[in-house]
Image 1 (tube, one colour):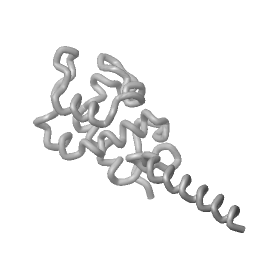
Image 2 (spheres, rainbow, N blue to C red):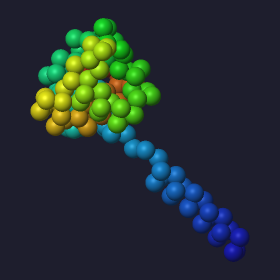
Image 3 (cartoon, helix red, strand yellow):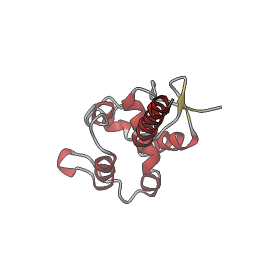
Length: 129
């Protein structure tokens, strides 16, 4: 009886520990294109800042790199620094003075991370019902 109890406790502790350390996605998506209100703000920020001019309408790159690929390895901190400060030597402008981009940085990251993760399956998203 004691042994069975301890095994259950061990499993509970391991699963609780894993659940606490597993990262949660910064976006919510249904059917591949219906997103939560915060991620929708990220999409709208993407459109308003005209990021598609360099990164392509599907975030797969043009003059600028593919963000679908880049966000597989880029940390959120690196993403924020790049968007805020730009990479002038590579042609990436700074958005540090853009209130819309700066106020919606987390949402922009969520949208692009969802695209990179493959959870958001098309570039144009719609609000969740």
